[in-house]
Structure formats: C-alpha cells, structure tokens
Image 1 (cartoon, rainbow, N blue to C red):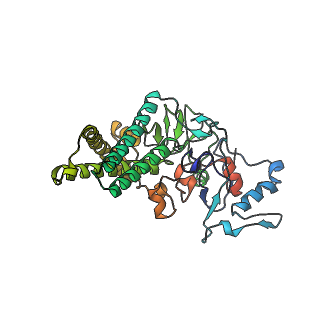
Image 2 (cartoon, helix red, strand yellow):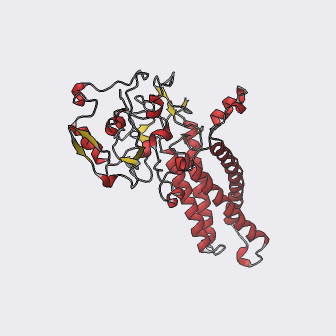
Image 3 (cartoon, one colour):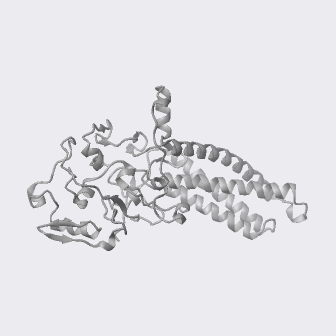
Length: 379
C-alpha cells in the first residue's frame, strides 16, 4: 500500500513517519448527472475520458485497485478483496499530496508544521519540557526507593502517550482545504450555493474557518491552540482529545501518589530529602495547573461534540445572538475516532473515517476521477 505523506489527508510525521498515513475511505454513492452549479467543476473532455465521461484505461486500473468496479466497453475491472464485506465502502490509498521533505502549512509542504507563530512554537516546546520533567521526577523517586517501580513504569507510559499525542496533534494537518477542493457529491447534486473563502480564493466547506495563523481554511475548525502550535480541526481532534486525557490522567495520578505519601505514609522511605523535595514541590504545582487547564478544555470539547458546534461557531453565534436558532446534530464518535478497532481509539494514530469526504466536507478532483462515478465532475 503506497503511503500518504499526510495521514488521513493530514500531515503525519508521527506514528508512521514521514510519508505515512492510513487509506481514505469513501462511501459509494448513487448515480446522477453532472452538476452545472460548481464553477470549477466541468465534465472531462472526450479526449481524456474516451468520449464517455469516464477516466481512461490507466485511471480505471487505479480505480479497480481500490476496489471500485467500472465498466468501459463492456470490460469490467474489479478486485472485490479490497472492498468491505458489505460493499458499501472503498479504500483509497492513493497520494494526492506533496512528497517534498519541507516543513510548513502550504500545499507544497510535505510535512505539516506551523512556522508562522513563534510564541506558539515556544509554548509547544514548554509542554514537552514539563512532561519530560514530570516523568524524570517520578523516575528519580523510584530510583531512590520512595516509589514502587511499577507505579513509575505506569506514569512514564502515560507521559509517553501524552507526548506522542501532542506531537501527533502538532504535526498533523488539521483538515486544511486544498485550492482544488470541490463540494461533496450530495451537495453538488442539490445545486446548493457554496461559500468561497476570501483569503484562499477557493471553496470553503460548511463549518470550516480560515485560520490567519496557519493561513489555511480548516474543516470543522474548533480553535487554534498555541500549546499545540496548530489548529484543532476534523483531522486531528482525536489526538487532541487523547493529549488532554493522558495529561489529566498523569497529573491526577501524580497528585494521588504525592497525597498518599504525605498524609498516609509515615515510614522513613516516604520522607523526601535534598533536591527531591524541590522537584516534587514544583511538580505538584505543574500537576495542579495541568488538571485545571485540561479539565476546562475537556469540558469545552465534550460540549462541542455533544452539540456538534465548535468553539468558533459558538462564539460567533453568541455575538450575533443566534445561539438558540441553530440545532446542529452531535458529532458521531466514528467521525472523531474512526471505524477501526476500539484499541486504536486510545492510541495517537490516524483515524480511518467511515466517509472521508463527508467528515471533512469536501472532495478532490483526483478522488472523483478514481471513483469513476458518472454523477461526479472534476475541475
């Protein structure tokens, strides 16, 4: 399976390394006619489509490889083992993004990293320093015999998962909208009016917002987090939730251990001495602040998932006094954590969405070509 440089259409430098990422999943759609309402969308010329509005033979082979059967001149190309059992989805493992080994948030950059916000870069490094400091403090306590080694192993594992989730959030494309993005099939067939971004000069999907720091439109953007040095959007919301959860868990665990040591343990091994006293005191302050911050953020994210409305959308509606006029459906868990095993829900890996285009709110010409449906058109 050829790798994607941006996992799930997101910058994936963590988990699979540079050039890694899961396949996209697209729900098969029914037939229809070409829409005329999309300015960029035009049916393929007869030269490119063999005069039948379909991709040429080499494109059909690509489609058949991902399990989409297409018939041209009564010749069927199909590999059913790439489909799911119900035949409802097909897996698209093709790469539509840049392979350049460059850092940035532009479409030509192969590795997603926000370089436009120096304070955000500093704040994200501070997060790493504090988590590493906390893990080393617990390790020193265990080495000095003040803490059971099994508890230190558990805490360091939680710290490692928190760091991996933070890195995954920071280096992942949050769901940026490419310049050639087109509406998803259902919206195109309904001839709806579509919003264009004034800054990107391209299609702007519903519930997306333009980030002035990343200088990109982000699908289902919740907010730009300086501690992550990245936007939080549809493609990296899972890893952001995992970071909050593991940070809260580690902070609570450390405070419980310190509390039991201070109030319940009266043995000599429970008395800290020398530099360990100062390390534990500073770590206690870190843990208290972390619990307060992550608790508020988890409450905010939970409310957004339950109401289906992101932080920016809620603030805009509150300013315009239209908060009660919108009744968005809650987000589905599979649209956040994917359709993989429940074990992957707790790991900072890319989710495989049940319908990639629906979750992100846009499709791409290359994907529509590979799908080979007569109800789609491309630029």
